[in-house]
Length: 409
Image (cartoon, rainbow, N blue to C red; front, side):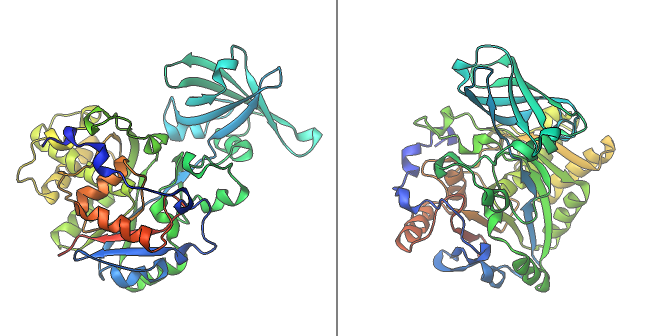
């Protein structure tokens, strides 16, 4: 069966509303940990995770940082318009550092009542220090708007403006407004590079104490960056996955990390990904290398991974080391130290994962592309995993508990 023919109804399960964790636990690493090892299920808590990661492993995290991307702005008549910044129309790092104005692709709540003219918001604690942000529509698309933001005083960067008046964009299934605690708890402790509108939630369970134990076991910790978009919550509404448009996201990896991955695979060291975003980044690197082996003259745009590339690309007998070396050579020829690209990779049953020997991830929504990814790793065993979690009082979704899937025999 072709991957496009996979029926979403086969990846549904009953998730009672009360099992969705609306708030995080007081202690991050007190979250429950479901262990899937050698096709057997057991449980522990995240503070003991180090016991299950092989010594000498390479463990990779996504260090993206969630931006306070949700803005409430007032029309001249007093009505409120909600603007959700999805991604900049220019380069992310440039737009976040801009002074005075910036243009973004946005979702707009209450758009039908926003006919023309700017909307605005103010911040500051005293009348002598009131600052103003305005927004106007520069493009009306079918699913999104192009918005130009302007602010005074212009000495602030757009990142500082968002930090002052924006709200953390919680997932819609939490069904509540963001609170002050979410500014800290809807971020990983290693969040570094701003750009996501959703957290890489598998990393929310990690603490400095867990990191210290991992390092004491000679486990090498390193980072990729993939900026998580709002499309990660887009439900699969089609009957088959072939009619679902997978979201695309930007990722950023260093030349040094590519070299480290090559060395790890040459030495047959275990590689553990924390989060589906990390896994998608790693598999995208492999597929990009395969593209280069098939066609060494590709430019960066042609090199990027489209939704069905993984199932249509010729990659028979292309090893991880060979693919990553081709990508490394391409970077060297381009005189770049970092690879910044976009991936639309869909990982579904039938996809042979090449880059990892283990995955830490949370429990995902019924019928979601993330659940398809889990099924690609463990097959029909995903049903037993999720039923175990339901039967044993695990908490689900972003602020919920998680699991460690060990793919080694």
